[in-house]
Length: 82
Image 1 (tube, helix red, strand yellow):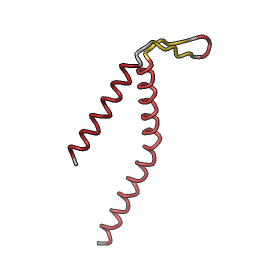
Image 2 (tube, helix red, strand yellow):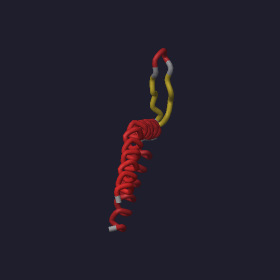
Image 3 (cartoon, one colour):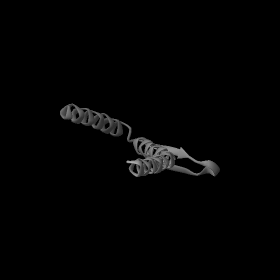
Image 4 (cartoon, one colour):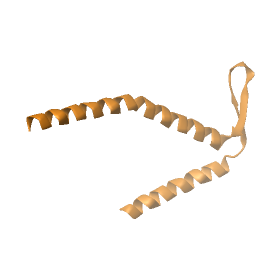
């Protein structure tokens, strides 16, 4: 099973690497007020994907901390009774 997982990871990496190599043309990312940024398309996609993952993790942190606090309180209650 571990080998299958590594093969899938390697395949995904090679597909994404090939995508990055094929999409290395300069692309203009236009902002408001006439600002723009020139960068390869693959770099722009990687940056925004990373920002999206970071935003999702930050949004879930409050829930994770709340659940950990509740689990800790439940364990303390269980130890007091036991």
